[in-house]
Each structure stands twice: as C-alpha cells, then as structure tokens.
Image 1 (tube, rainbow, N blue to C red):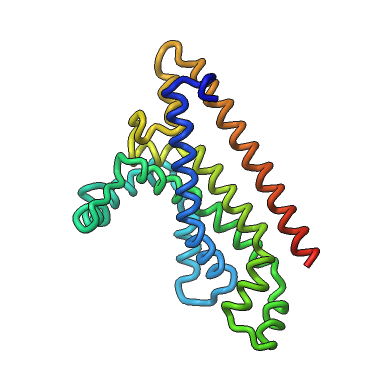
Image 2: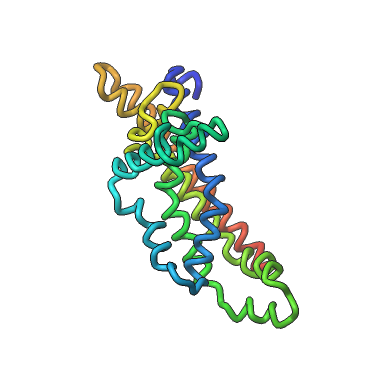
Length: 232
C-alpha cells in the first residue's frame, strides 16, 4: 500500500486508523455503561440521558464540531481547564479528531449494545443471583458473554463511523496535513485542487476496503463468540 499510495495519502490513512482506534477504544467502556443504564436502569433523568446519547445523530455534524470548539477549545471552559491543569490541548490536534469521531460514533455503539442487553432474558441473571452470585459475578459470567456479539458489533460500527467522520472533525480540528487530515478530509482537499482526483479515488478505494474488512472481521468474531457460547 505504501508503494501505491503517495506519502501524503498514506499519512492520511495512518492517521485515520489511529484516530478511529483510539476513538473506539476510549469510548467503549462509557458506551457499555450507558447501554446498561438505558436498557436496565430505572432512574430520574433516563430519558434525558437517552436524548443526549442520540443527539449527535440528529444534529448537523458541523454544529457538533462547533460546540466541541466552544467547549474544548483553548478558550472554552473545558479546554482551558485541561490546558492549564494538565497541558492537554484538543483543538487542532489529532486527539481532538479522536474526540469528535468518538462523539459522532457513540450513538451507534450504544444502540448496538443496548439491543444486545435487552435481548438477554433477565431470568437467566435472576437464576444466577439466587445461587448466591454477586452482581459483578452475574454480569461477568452471564450477561457479558451473552452480549459480547453486540459489543463487537457496536465497536465495529463506531470504528467505521469514526473512519468516515468529516463534518465535526474538520470544524473542530481543521484540516492540517500530518496532524488532523484524516481520509475524508484528505479526499475533500484533493478534490479542491486540479489533478487531485486520482489521489481522491485511491483514498476512496482504501476507505471502502477498510470498511468491508471491518464488517467481515465483525461477522467472523460474532460467529466465533456465538459458537463458543453455544458450545459451553
């Protein structure tokens, strides 16, 4: 691939994979907690949490990116605090691109996990609890194995969404070569210059190949997990 792609194109692919990986990995535990809360929780503010989780799906991505810039920019209430206390800057950095991608992908991740949790028969968990298992034991030995295919599906959906994220990312972190220029941003940039169509097409092919590969891997892993559960 390094021979077929130019240095700038390869740089965009590598950055997209890096951003998508960290966006998915960091948001995974938060997504699982939110999915559990929405699927099994009965608490004040549950509807509000549901709206907040799904808000990025209905807001224009540019609006989400601008809100991130207001909140996490150097002058924003959260961004200035992170910069002052920890020296962390998100705006116009690849870490900011990962944050934007994670937020845009979060609803898809939570939804896949929530559907998997809701499909688990609560009687199985109740039976384990009556045998003296703690809540953590019930979750780790009963619930988690059953919802693992949903977790995998949610992670793959989030990764694919993060790979294709454009609007919120370019608004929050701009389109800086080598720092924030992911595959979608690079395609957009190449299409703005004469003769850039060839590079754009190559990146489109790479993006399609990565997306198909992720789906195949997800399906294979889900089947392996399902077979393992059935065998046990």
